[in-house]
Length: 127
Length: 127
Length: 127
Length: 127
Image (cartoon, rainbow over all chains, first blue to last red; front, side, top):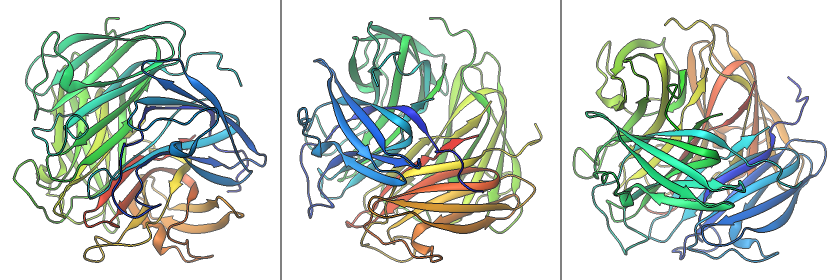
């Protein structure tokens, strides 16, 4: 049961992007955030481009991130700065395109109220 | 890594539709809602028809929505009015059919109790 | 964009079945439950068999349910009685086999603490 | 509608692994945990290898688990010890490879705040 081929696909998307507008609780764990978690099981670096789509303006990007071979990377949209930060309390979607197969999971922590709420889903992918 | 083809599929469905019957907290963020988030990466407008299925009556619809090219749209079921509003506290499902490939994610915010609860999942799709 | 073919697949499964062992809040909305929501877009009744798998005993079932044509049905595992009820606070999985294509979503409401928590995911399917 | 073939796939992954760093509420139900729930509908034992990927070090594993024929197993990452425990409050991903087809669902209970939060999603799979 050796891993022969890297697992995953090269094109992914999430449709429900949203950084909650405020937070309760201790930082950094309880800061409201929206994130994509990326697994790269390949033997080479994943060069990844993110494109952010909005409801009322042209897309932003590409945002360039890399995930080293045999590593995971949990990326908070809150922390993307280049080419521009993503405003909180704003609807967006995200297209993820990678140079090698990856697996992408979308997770949000919403601590706008006193107790946190969580969502997570494997993103949509195409071969 | 240019986006050559629009990502997604043209037929989607969610099975667990439900608008919670009451809310706690500040509007509009904390109003209980059930929503579909739609990403259109295509270069043309997505003309979309929603059909709402119930447990005890014939389906309602089509509800017609459009998503401009290269845009996202987060649509609350609470806000659909034509051909008829969807009652809160009622089980439903939703079929989504689009003129171009799209990506659909289903998200609910339930603030019936003092602290909000969230769900989200990529919807079911077919080519 | 007429719906020509029923959407979905005939074999589905959820792996994380669990009825929380206690509840807080008003019935029936806030009673802890684990449920499958089934959409039948076909023009004929869906005859469905559920098989429940456990960690330490042979499977139970089949549990037989039907979903009328063009209808949705949200079924709480809590309410299945024949051939036997499913114990709360017990790990299980569920295989869903249908006579026509359906779409299945798995949702749990957990009100063991004062504020409810929710999960939902489209189930796993095969053609 | 007899189950002829085992349902599922042999290679699965979750990208967002995370054991919350602390808990509130009664044990064992309300202990924060991250888990994979595995359904084996086959007539033979599933021999499964888990590989854990990190952001800043080489992968750990394989962790070997088995699921008997026609059984489910809900495995908390918290409880894996061999070849090494997985640290809480650490980002990870998990590759799951099985000798027979299985279905995998990823669930987390986060009780770091007074009320618990939950996530769940069917994992990503390949044939």
